[in-house]
Image (cartoon, rainbow, N blue to C red):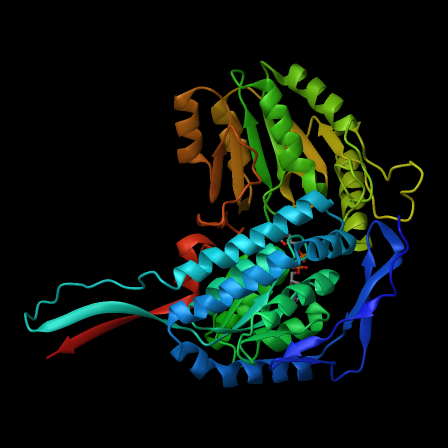
Amino acid sequence: MQALEKAATYLNYIRGEWTASATGQTESSINPANRNEVVGRFQSSDARDVDLAVAAAKAAQQAWRRLPAPARGEFLYKAANAIERRLDEIALTMTREMGKTLPEAKGETARGVALLRYYAGEGMRKVGDVIPSTDGEALMYTTRVPLGVVGVITPWNFPVAIPIWKMAPALVYGNTVVLKPAQETSITAALVVECFAEAGFPAGVVNLVTGRGSLIGPALTDHPDVQAITFTGSNEVGKLIGRKALERGAKYQLEMGGKNPVIVLPDADLQLAVEATISGGLRSTGQKCTATSRVFVHKGIYEQFKALLVEKTMQLKLGNGLEPGVWMGPCSSERQLDTVLSYIDKGVAEGAELLCGGKRPAEDGLADGFYVEPTIFDKVDPASTIAQEEIFGPVLALIEVGSLQEALDKANDIHLGLSASIFTKDIGSMLSFINEMDAGLVRVNAETAGVELQAPFGGMKQSSSHSREQGQAAMEFFTAVKTVFIKA
Ligand code: NAD
């Protein structure tokens, strides 16, 4: 690999200015493909920085909300253009910072551009309805107003798309934002915010504060001037945020984990089902909230499916996501690698049979990265830990079933419900699955991971706080409905 430039230091973005943290401290962002490489340094902020950012967002709020929505949309178009111009640089940084392959990082950055353009267009669409009044001389209608200052807290696994799919609707509907990205991907977030700065948003409309979630997260979520929190991340942190927001009456939205099943019936296109299971479960090193994790396969094709799945998984090329031909990069951090390895140990301890993977790869050149082999377990008890808890790594749990009903019962026997898919050619089976599967996203003959930005996205059960993101559904969270009654 080419020699890398000296790591740069990135600042917080507050009131339209790049600002060092009040702490005077920075932290390093490490490349998970090579722990010796520092991607950059970011501000290790504390509550003082959050206070400044919230004050800036609050001060900018009135003028921003008074701007017509189509004019707010124009800023989003400009941010989209700025990201498009810098797409290669942002994608490269994303790969270096969290490990996904460069083609995936480019795809995600392009998704960010598309999201911005979609929500820029939303600035031109209707936000209310006229409702007949019982008073013949009155006009009654609904309109929508912004909430105020929105705190945006995001994970590291989609470091461009998730901040944008939250910030873009927040902004177009008239809110101002403070973004607190996952610290693992602070540099990528800074580049995205640089593009917002290039777009010329008025000072204070978009703010960025980086640092430890456990420290600056609560400073943001508990701040009395933050009217709403939109969060994507783990269930543990999400529940904490939800409880606190409820106590102080702030609006909140939580998108959290998944433990997503695929069901493969005897009439499935086997090749397709295997490829989609691999792609859904192992791409991005299994670090997608919609990643396939539990694989329910009918006994009629179980052995065939298993053999093909293992054969194809063994062919996957592991390595640094910047290198051409690499299919799967490292886990995003050492902490994530340790978590995955500990779940693999638990799987073995609880009696599942390891078919492939299960350890760090021995290949040359991978020792300094947080790599783990793609792993498949057979004979998994659906009640065991690896079938019940989100691993967030490249681990698949195979479970044999005798019927669709058994598959549905077992797939639904869990506290999460984000996405699910089925492989079958039978319309009746498809409909049963669509009706009975507890998941916010159900996909037929397609992998569990796959989200289109113009459609609502979110989970059932404990996968979300039951609101939806993306598409026009985003308006529900980022605005309040006002019912207007006018008597002439
Ligand atoms: P995480 O919960 O550890 O962190 C998420 C964010 O919360 C980070 O910015 C972190 O700094 C911040 N944070 C940590 N402690 C906090 C606190 N006490 N108060 C406020 N903020 C705090 O999650 P992660 O490891 O970054 O991401 C992985 C998780 O995200 C997985 O569970 C995955 O399923 C989930 N996820 C869900 C979706 C979805 O849309 N449903 C999408 C992507 C990821």
